[in-house]
Image (cartoon, rainbow, N blue to C red):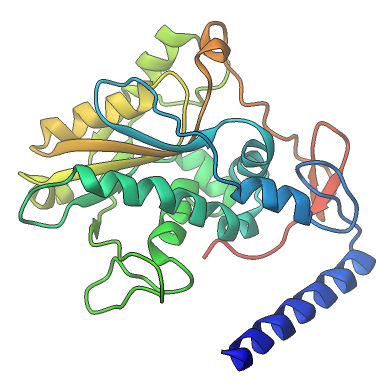
Length: 283
């Protein structure tokens, strides 16, 4: 036990040394608070991982959310979703795992449930180089480095096993655009441009489905996806999300205030004027 603890301490020291070296070569700042030398500083990581009050948006079906769309969770998600900060998946994925495990309690069928991610627009996927919800979900089911959702694999020590089938079942249809700036009616109309892939209908028919998204705002995206899955013969038993916008923030035109891409190839400039480097890969 002491040997394992010593190994973990050594790895932590090596990681800190590597981050110090990178900070000298490519100056950076915390994406959450602006503190120098770290893409996300230790106090903000502690805030991200701190357990909070449960958030349960009213969608007409069980909905499990990690936390409100605020603070470190919001800042890191914005950087990951809009700024190409793929390395943040390693922090956000474990946070998504928590509500995902809770949602599995809604499943009662004899067959393992199917986990389906909300689809990303092709333009965003091309720009980022990854479908951000799929990447978060991959990290969530993987736990601490393995893939417990795959047959024959064991869950990491001390972590519950995610016994479910991953299926890329949804796609956006022509005319879908960003939800930013749309009112509730506009979001509902835009979110309706989603369909089930024809090749996945047989897998979904008669199965329980857990639908996963990154942010619940008005719920339009989740409800449109639920309806599309139901039309294919599936039954969505729960919705899971990383965070939810508080209802008071959804009464007027909505925006997630994404970062603005800088002209510099070395990073992304956020509204506060901090330039941060891209680190890591999404997987």
